[in-house]
Image (cartoon, rainbow, N blue to C red; front, side, top):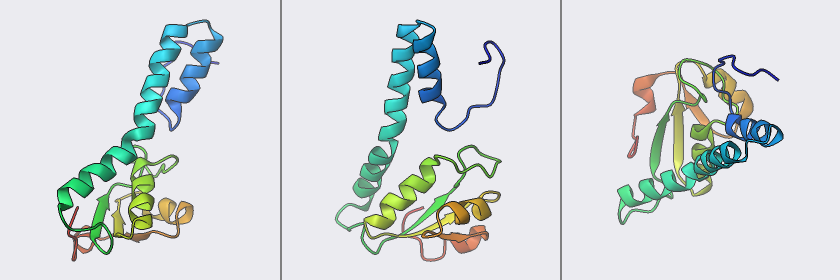
Length: 132
């Protein structure tokens, strides 16, 4: 365990930090970190609600949606616990036609989530998109 050394945030960091805080007896810090984890877990549901509201009367089914950014963190190819990929899966399960663009993470995302559609071409990612 490293204490006091700065590191880049990693996927699942709130859960890991919460566990360490509990081990160290820092219950209030653990509670705060657990709250952050709950917020992260609810982001997909909130995003789906915003998209549904933006569509108004139109259903998500058969709507062409573009998602920019597949990586957990910008400028990387790290897609572990990617909210963008989780949202893309949820949209696809709701019947949307989803295209994902990320300048660095498409190859990694394709391996992790081959059921989704990807493009390296920014302009092509918007072709026919109704939501992006």
